[in-house]
Image 1 (cartoon, rainbow, N blue to C red):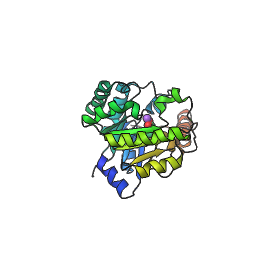
Image 2 (cartoon, rainbow, N blue to C red; image 1 turned 90 degrees about the vertical axis):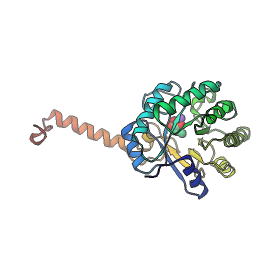
Image 3 (spheres, helix red, strand yellow; image 1 turned 45 degrees about the vertical axis):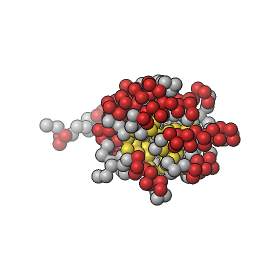
Length: 265
Ligand code: KIV
Ligand code: NA
């Protein structure tokens, strides 16, 4: 199998083929995601919500991200594995950013890191890139800044914020990022940014004109039932599948149906 690299993603954009990306946080799920042909697997700090049950992405630690990332890396044969630098591990201190990125690369075997923000984290991005670690940007609704935004509503609807997003995207490209996640921004802005940039954009809630799309795996498989934003398409109802299977098992145990003779030694 030919591995996906940051160069592969650039080629896909150049020839107009869309990039598919999904999150994964553990070995078993990552094996399925990789086998299905997804090009980019993000070990997102959404693990804080989906794996640990926190309300925001802020509490997850660098050690916890490394644990998830190592589990995913051991499963993946083809996809590019990108890992989120968690809140507090890179902002405002480029030495700490470099230390954090190096720990992720060394201890998990991942292929790249992702950081939220533009101009504000310029020094950290430059420093990490200078060590040879590929960096993906993330603009728009950046969940590590949720307490600054105060809401999970669509970002960059106003011209000033849209202009800042465009200049941040150009900055991230100029300093050497290999791609940028655009989260929950107007589709027209995504189109504009994606056309202006040479590097690929990966959208979530950002409309059809990003160079690729990403979703949180538990959301798109319908394991989460409560989270249903407009941008989320559900490809399965695993909540129902799992609930019914488990209820069936409980019933079989109670009624002495399981295990039967052929399931015993
Ligand atoms: O943490 C995450 O899952 C993400 C994606 C939704 C882009 O950052
Ligand atoms: Na994230």
